[in-house]
Amino acid sequence: MGTLAAVPLVALLPMTNQTYIILTIALTLIGTYASARAERLIGRKDPGCIVIDEFCGYLVSMALLPITTFNLIAAFVLFRFFDILKPQPIRALQKIGGGAGVMADDIVAGLAANLILQGWRIWIAR
Image 1 (cartoon, rainbow, N blue to C red):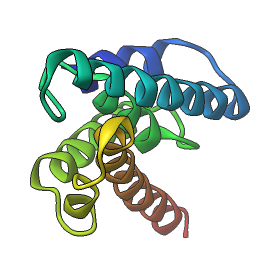
Image 2: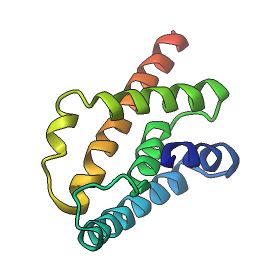
Image 3: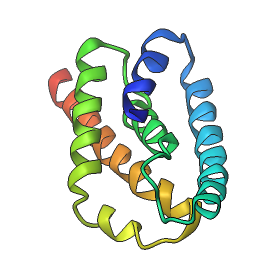
């Protein structure tokens, strides 16, 4: 649900690239702190009720990309693909403890999705 909630934010809020990056970093830092607290309160590692990691992962997947229907959908699909399958090194990041561990695998899944879309964008522009 966190990923789905991020799509309209990216699609509808007009932001410069600089504002977008600052928002993504700020939410990632807040998410790291909040998820560490939530883990302690709930008493479980990376409980499913924490969704800010997915929200931030999607923000990373759309960073510095044009806001188009194709990019919004492709980033969603690619991010969910990497987040669910967790290929290495994404899987290894789950071993990190606390809030950093909750956030890290989703941030890197977002980076993987973003790199694919940036590559696609460059290839299409040729």
